[in-house]
Image 1 (cartoon, rainbow, N blue to C red):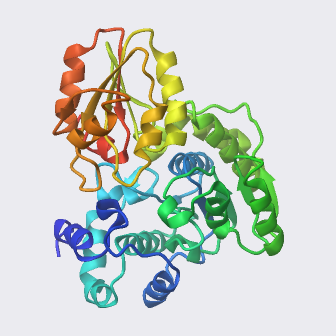
Image 2: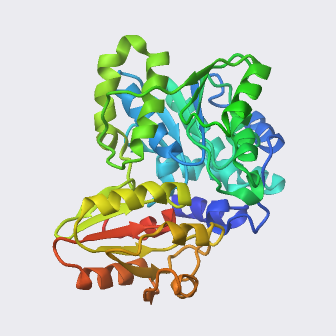
Image 3: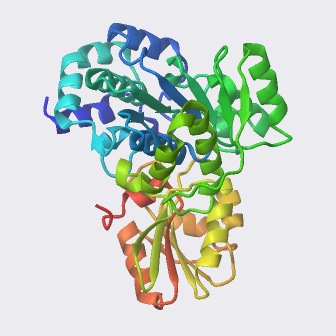
Length: 402
């Protein structure tokens, strides 16, 4: 198989949550990934590991952790999802993405076994990443859960530290209808005796974390306010930064002068994109992958502070999100809306979004992100702000980003 053939096989031949959502044989559970990893020789499972769960901030936390550790001289394998522009983003060491040749060889060698056992896209990409990290003999591995925690494929790891970022009402159809129920699923990554850094201290979820951590004898470390800074500019990064600095201080206290420098080089060291990322000026153009009501609370506040002019919102949304909650977060003042389709079948069409929004946030609809962005550019004045987001899939359609 060539690289393109291998990736096409992965996308087409197995259940794929990024492409289909939960509608087509979505799989959770640990028996499948455990058997898959045993078949492959359990790659990466003896390498020191940091495991991250939460509703928002997992990707930012993982990349900040990796940047700090890299600045301190460590080779760090990072597994995260979803990808924006290339499948290879899901596994990286520093700025290096998993090579096309490795992907092609991995799938070519094992695809008959994979097909026979019906593994999911996420299970296979996780196994691929671990196999590559083992081959490259990295010093540490950072694993970002895909959605939940307790039954997430990554939860077969043996972590040295766990991090839980925050708890929001996302993926309720799989994780539970309340923040307590969702917290219990995310807390499923807690292991016996393994310290867990919890970023958000909240009266509703704190008892859940305390109960589970006490059951497993796992020390809880609540994230502390810090004076560190980062080159990731979203307002919401302040909370993520507290968790990262607490975790790095716990693991690598002696290297604080180095890892604190790395926090200001996240983009440079890890090629991380899509978080309050500027891609133009006059008017200022910002994209962000935030895609639920908790994320948009911060995004709206920051957008309103970023300009005294009009905000031109180029927005799409995945069909399984809380669309009404998302719409209610959006401002009426100083705002114009452009509703867009994306290339992902998981997203609502721009016309459907515009119909849902017509009484709350009316605006025209477009067949593509580029068409919607072009319309916003025509209408915007130099002092305005154009914001592109609402979904990872919207940002992934921005051809302006290399």
